[in-house]
Length: 239
Image 1 (cartoon, rainbow, N blue to C red):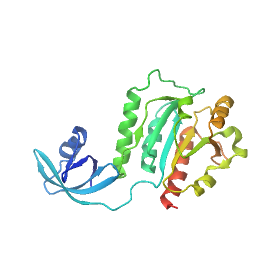
Image 2: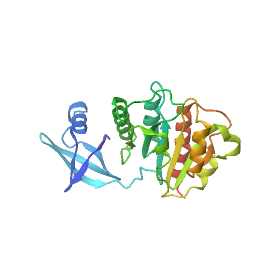
Image 3: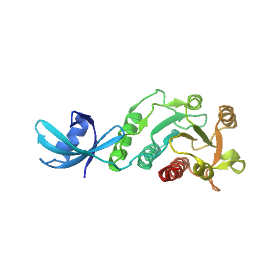
Image 4: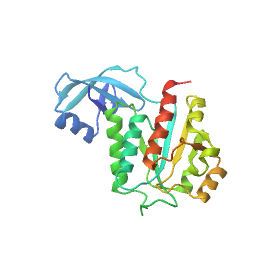
């Protein structure tokens, strides 16, 4: 069954132009075809009753739980090539609620504006990832942030993946096991060259827990998806 994002009004689903185009022109929907429409945190079973004008009738509400029990915020230093696309696509599939790409001291590619075509692309990828795995919400993708601004993001649990003290840090796995549901979690992942000592001290002063991602040094994009996977797995369990 095809899955779309829209708004439910008086028992009917309203789609924006992009979602409508995909349903009518790309997928070539038929009268009486059933589709899923996600509206905020809810997903509805609907039926196409007219194509011109498009009219989608709500039949019922899905009781399936599509989202994690915790809000998961993934802040990652912008990377070279298409690694940012990979983080957002797979992160959306893993249940990340919000992505915060940021520029740190050792970031190789440093955008000059808060938003550009790459951010617009990441937002489209987040939508596609959420749609493909039938999520109830579309993850938010922020514009580029400064590292110092990431430290001010509000969350119940704030974790900083710093390879410089991996042996002296709690493992992400151990922390994930103890997180109660309905808590917001922020995890911060650095660039290809890692964080500087000065950045690590700023994070410590801001109240972040330093976490280890295991015995091996991971590539930045692997670290981001490893963190999302571990936190997603334990949030799925629900405590």
